[in-house]
Image (cartoon, rainbow, N blue to C red):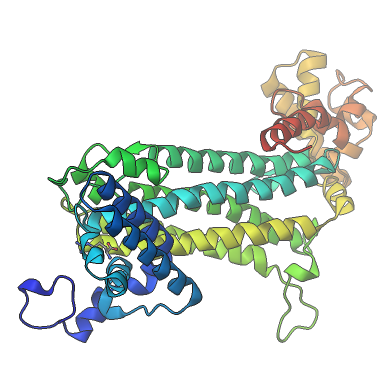
Length: 460
Ligand code: ARG
């Protein structure tokens, strides 16, 4: 019976229980946080005269050795140790003897795991912000070259009004900026230390929680211990933040897939980020954006999974909570990989400006401009102008031309208030540039948006 908690048991645990109960095969990812947490805890215990200086020195030396063993691959992770906390403490005690047995004074695995996991999540909130900014920088860079590249703006996936490609890309940059703000605010909200909450109710030992919080880089100390050892909001938040970010990535990916098709051919992904077919020799498939879209579903699954784990738990710690880690690790690693490959795929794709321009010559993209002309130039109420424009669209369809190519005479026949100066209003580029209202697509407006995001990212 080698369990740390075996005192009250008369029979050893079955190996089936060991396999079912253990988290050590996945929570070992938190070994750095765990060792740093233990060093901070021991340092505080020594400051409070709960440990002697010699005991502290020997604990720190021992923990650093354990860390070296883990990093060199020497460390033996044993299912029977249950979790990394006990695995590490056991090895420490084997190395240094009795001082190792004092480390857990005024601490429980409940506050220990809360510290480790919270610090991992806080760190990942920060790292993901950096990775998102790199994707934004590629989008902004690409946008700089395309403020005059026309493409059809769509609603219902139907041609609506002409926009420029930079404007379209900056819509995604806007989404990613909100994602960053979410990661940053989660970081601030959850940046408090659980250490010293012990099992659930605090401890009679004269500890100094402010001190360990400071040593571990937390902003402050949690207020209510019962809440703190039960709280996994920080994990739910990063799952939600990643889910929302992946939803944005997935929408962009959907467009990349569509734009890669022969029906659109607005872009071509580089060979490095495309795949072939095992049977059809001609195929070049957009597996990267497809997988980004697909992985989004998996990340949502982790969010739903943890929300469901948490929903019925009475206070305080319950072992159900151990199910919090794998989903978060998986979502974080998926997000990191996704951002990395999205950045590369975007940076290397070929943008087919001519095809975008050609696509603007179908679908009567400047119809709204004709209606706007009738309002502005002829004083016609918008509803009536809409109707007259509908007639002009029907005429263009009959003539098998785009409205932007219709002759002035045809329009004059439909309504004699229409003058020859209408023609310039119907050109696609003028239509795009006419949208000068704040946040609109005109090249001038797009350049202002570009400047805003460059300033935000600190790039030129
Ligand atoms: N392995 C556990 C987890 O991940 C650590 C906390 C265990 N605490 C307990 N009282 N059993 O949640």
